Length: 273
Image (cartoon, rainbow, N blue to C red; front, side, top):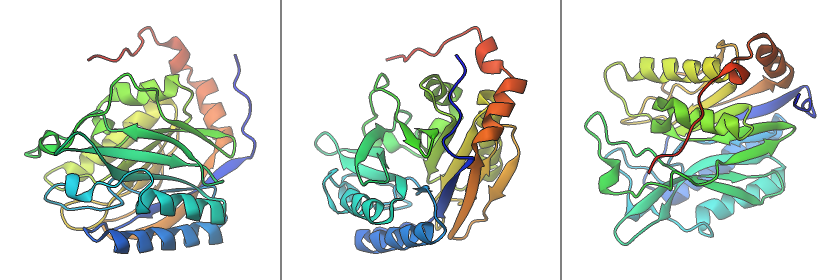
């Protein structure tokens, strides 16, 4: 079945590459300022990095956990309702005793909490051990996909980018744009990996990719927006910055018509426990 055309020619997305800190109140102020910028440029959606509520480059755990009705998500909902700008943002939720949950929340332009994605692939690689502090999300949870101004945005986070099946599962759920909030750890070849994987996820899924990295100590920044044809339309450096781009819904349809690889595929994605 041919998908319905987008409600608008393009969807305006503000990329908020913020520098997170352990100071939750300071982070909320930075997030509020980014909403103000998004409102000024008439954005439909603002995307924040992983761990936007509170971040420590040595590791995030229960000390930074806040409930969904806590100060951070409440601020997102208030600012979304005030500005009409939807939001996708990384946060940390309470988990089992002594552990927390790395999560991404989706808020619509009316300020309603649309859904929560709990990170499935914990970052136990390159000398890091997220699983020492965090519990993974359920692999069979429904994918988080938000409708924003006529396009569908599917949510994953950071290390998930290295797992093509995570992106493909979102596309199977109707995502046209893959959103990747991240605090991508610095290290040898890490900027190249981040850039290459974001482009690969766009090409193989004929989907746009909005990959928003955190800036600051221990992480790389380098947020980028990739078209469904693999062309990079925006890439930031390692400094904090807020930029806005238009995601072209018509281009998504054209690329998928020219390259029907999704309909030509012969394998499906099945969650594995």
